[in-house]
Image 1 (spheres, one colour):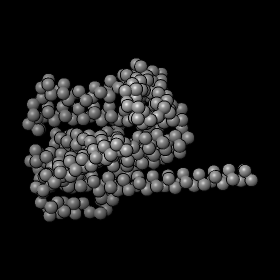
Image 2 (cartoon, helix red, strand yellow):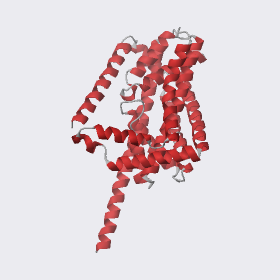
Image 3 (cartoon, one colour):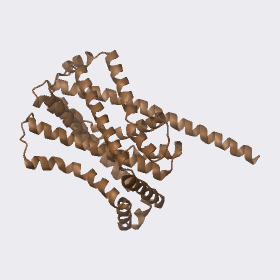
Image 4 (tube, helix red, strand yellow):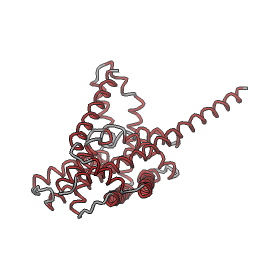
Length: 349
């Protein structure tokens, strides 16, 4: 109970921090002008934008599907896309840098897709690790580009380069560790469990450790025996990022922003950094980042907030779709249980 209480307290504190940031930066906005900007979009262009983003959300299951096929697991792409959208919905509502829905993806893949838990863990973990690596690579490239163009008034020097490259080293070290030793994460978790007080030992079930060890073994085998699959997964991640950039550009055009390349990259970098903060959906931080970016580029800050409000409306629409899909999966699971129970009763009779 203590762990749950502390987690809830932390979630509430981060949410309050986000609301404080939203209040600090949004109070300088002329809201009448803001509503005019949003009203210029119109319902039809907005619905088209949401439909495009729904297609993008489903399309982004491509890397996960490819990894599973490389592991010899055949799952229909549409079903996998639904599982990923449900996981993305949970991640959107979870404090942290867009993580939180991975256990749901593993559970859906293992229980609904009939995949071994070790393979499910390996596929989700490797999928997210590749996504994190490429995300950080693009973020590092964007930061270096903004420093090089001096669009933010900051100089590019060796210290800035080294500081910017530091976050990218972490996922690369993790990939290297999985390639070199295989089960080092399981060893770390076991070491942590041994240091926990006696009453805390059940928090790390033995079955979870076994599944984690088996998942790491699968990733180790893939990195050793099929590195081409990982390379192709990285290339798919690059394509996904290019799609994200196109989507971001489309959003700026919908609200009437005309940006040069340096300004556009600046807005993208500011948004990605804000999303990485441990605040649910980056609430407040994302708004503040785009308002600050607009002010730095000499633009109307109302445009920055309008861009985020468009993103928020899109995310709400996608979250509602994700929640509906999760409800549908739950109903389908209940029907399966009822059907299996009826078969068992008939067999007994």
